[in-house]
Length: 402
Image (cartoon, rainbow, N blue to C red; front, side, top):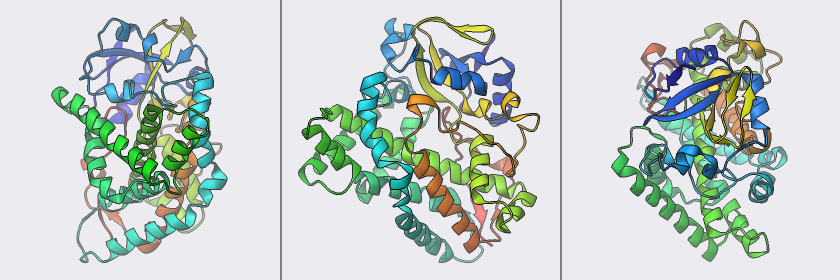
């Protein structure tokens, strides 16, 4: 099996994803730092593996980890070994840690956040409208980033004063370009910041999910401080990164497909279709780390060996022709059915999917209603990807608001 090196600086994710799909449903890949693992790259096989109890989150199953081959200064260590939370356990323990978060993020409860999301969206649009006419705007920094960060922070009870530090640390956390000597300190700083937030909430609880987790730990659910801190970090990280990329990717897709943009802005095609097709066609998450095989598992005509690591290559499987037909590589907002799994599948499916969809579903129509003549300020070919092997993320999205 030919090994494919995943390049965090890849300028053409589509070509890399096509190479992964061509390698078969199970591809042998190399992560930055020379770390070997396998990637599932086809839709059907991904659904199978994501519900297979023989594929677990326990890093101690990983042969390379047991042999001491994964250094603590590996740039992706925070994703591979983020500490004990619902992300890193399975079965009963996973259900225990996930239950409170899942209850807080049901579709019905998330819908109650709509008015607050609308207010935050309108405030951001007012700030954009106040900028000098004709000025190029980084839509990612000025619109796509503040909304999900404010929403998830309000939900978790994180003070807005902590946002700049969180942004700085998460930039390092997700980047494969963070110098190895800075990784341990970055991880310690993140842990210290979230520990402080939990400590403050314990002293002054509020109407937020962090306070609810603390209360549950004191009322018999037995969440440890480590579990609360790691859950908070996980939700903040995942709760804003995916939505930022989703908003950015929708705008890029619509601006490079003017006929389809016309159809959605005229009301002919609903925004829900645009969001779902973007999640499939240009998914916010390119590769998700990391699971481990407890025994040899057949995947198509190949085998995922016992003790080896598996990543899910959402960028590849989102354009799998076996699932979506010969037009899988095309952006088509009328595609139906569109049963993608961009938010995962199985027990570890993203609990924040409904919130991300709601934020995008509020923000994007409001953006185009306020600025119907919005356009990219540079050719799409000049947009630059950030050095993040797990995220389909741009440095910036320069636009003219019109």
